[in-house]
Length: 176
Image (cartoon, rainbow, N blue to C red; front, side, top):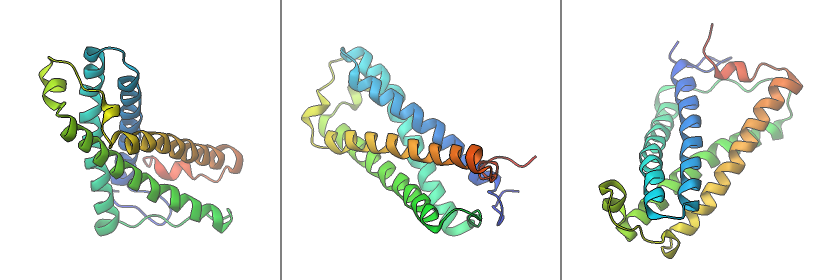
């Protein structure tokens, strides 16, 4: 079942969701580590993970947007929760897309303005201080927003699973 049904997500949506989630955690972790690194070599090592993972998140996000827009329909909302929760869930999902796209744009901006790409992927030289470049501010804000969105998203999923017991999480897993 590649496409979603009214009661559950299809395998394309499930795979892209969980793969994106894992890669976002890796991108955040490597990005925070790069920001805290005290020497250029360590920072470059973290960025050699961070940048390709972030590009993969971008590609998956663009794929997901096109998938939902042209090829699939999301399942119906679960019954029971108040309408404000459904609206908040939609807001969080849209915010994920906006923040991810903004993070990639600001990351590309930092790479272009700083010229750090050859140093990161060439393996020699000293990296610039990324805090000196204007895209660093929205990139940092975006990272914090992404963490907040992840906490809300995971918290809501756990609430539905363990407090409400409404099977919402099961909808976002592969069918047995």
